[in-house]
Image (cartoon, rainbow, N blue to C red):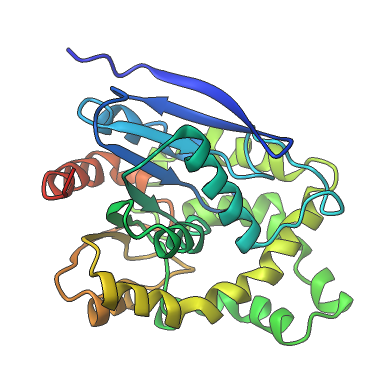
Length: 289
């Protein structure tokens, strides 16, 4: 049996310590796993052993998340452009020349920025509830969109429950096909990090800046049309935030994309990791090295 041990590492980038998980043979094709809100690379704990038997897998924690440094929003600019710049420094420092990228939630606009900036490095894209089309935004985004249109302190304060224990529990459980499969350490670990002093301001800054991702959607679509990257969509069809229509919309620009729906919610890996892992392995076989 091949060694699928997961290594837990840290790397310093521009004064920030970034935590990441790494597994698989370093000379195998690389897959970069980008987590979303409010989680960390911990969300990939069950997927990494499936993929690392054949592939080199790297899963970082974004600044402000998980075990990476979380400087205050006075010390670090929490924007998606800056998170993408940090991930660019990460792949550059690790010397990653070619990779497939798995994008989820917040990881989608970060990963797609990387893809636009490094089209020659991207072997393929796996989008698991990683939205890039306005059709995918559900009604759950309405209070956030109000904040985008009017970034007043009042509208900012109204979103503080976004980082609450109840909201985190909802993200994991809403739409889940079998809630008994959701490990309690997932949402409790996420909440532990959300509850750190000053973290609420970090998260509200990112919520506000998410509007820049929607503004970039046309550029993402232009990248898809120009480069036609190989794409696998693996989507929980009962996601309360990113609707199935957002997955289907990718086919407008990437008609050869493979689309798989799973009867579950936002954190589809919690309930369907075996199925998703198998579909990813089939997809990865089709990619250039």
